[in-house]
Length: 482
Figure 1: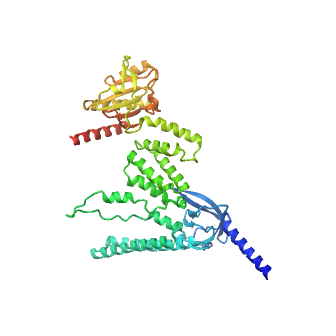
Figure 2: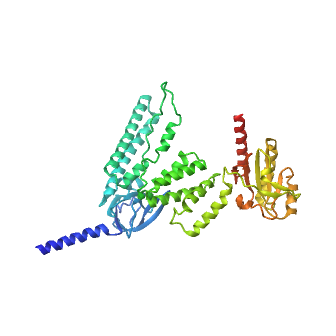
Figure 3: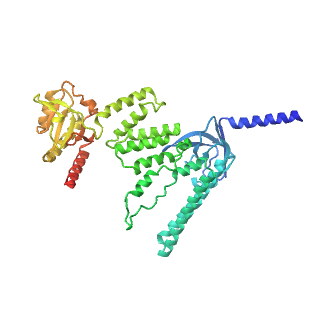
């Protein structure tokens, strides 16, 4: 008896050990009504297990659905996150992967994605049980809300108020359900997802003794300050959902003022929060870096330089390849001299008459730097437009420094004459001593910069239409100040 007891304990221990430390996953899947001829058949086809990562979806695994509607996804590893199972008709339903990696799901396909979710059942996963209950609740609330909103269009005044009250009650019920899940399952991925999507309740602005609002921007500042209060930056599982990405992007696209210095400050704040988890920090830094590296908005290269110097080039991104880091370093060095708001580097040139020209000796309210090459097709189109603009604004103190980027003087002089550019300040650098290509990142022509009276860069790498808009805005602001 004692021997049998010992063997039983050993077997039990081995079973627990295997379950605790076993790697991999196995998800059995079953589709009901597989023989329904009125529905597009799923049998004898492949279905896919996919996952969310940022704003994109990726395939993770595939399985074959047999004659009876059965299939199985299995493999060595399956990171926690929000996944979806995709049918050949591009209908899908979501499953949530938490601690349980060995479970089964079944559903009934009625020709649309909604039916897959409505009929979803699970066995062997607590996370799935909670998620299915949540989805059923939200579908129920949504159906009621849709019915009420349809009725709202043609309802009389009294009924409209009743419907609005009902919709408000639905919202409160959803909020209560979210709070209950967060309280009951605080460590679950679903709780992190709901917290990530939970909106901040903004209080009314403070008022003085006469009832006047003290700070008209109070609610905006409060919302901005508390925007990330509910986000669990320590939970890397959020990376395999779409919600963390959109939470971050919404903040930078919709909440903060899109000024480079402001963005740099906000990037640091968010990255400080994300630093509690290595994977979350890495992902957050990458999406912010990619966002501002590929931005077409003028001045956002300042954010690129900030992120490059303060994170990638100072050892805070150990995962980055050394060859790639060298490229980032070179690009940051190319951009630093000509960032928006910087004083423009001086350019020393020779005039057509071999007289000395210095950018800093040009006395003008605004100076346009026009880097061009006569043989460039785009330059041939842009130069007449620039000529017309300079003639239009010359009396308002706008000067053009036309900088020839090549070395054939006769070709240059002929172009000046043919385009009637004699009233510009024309210069070239035949000995390549001014370093303007590096200082102004001139990799193509035409390249246009706009400088203010103090030679501070207020516009860079812009087209002529944008240049005119900036000038008009500058003139308008000056008139308003007067």
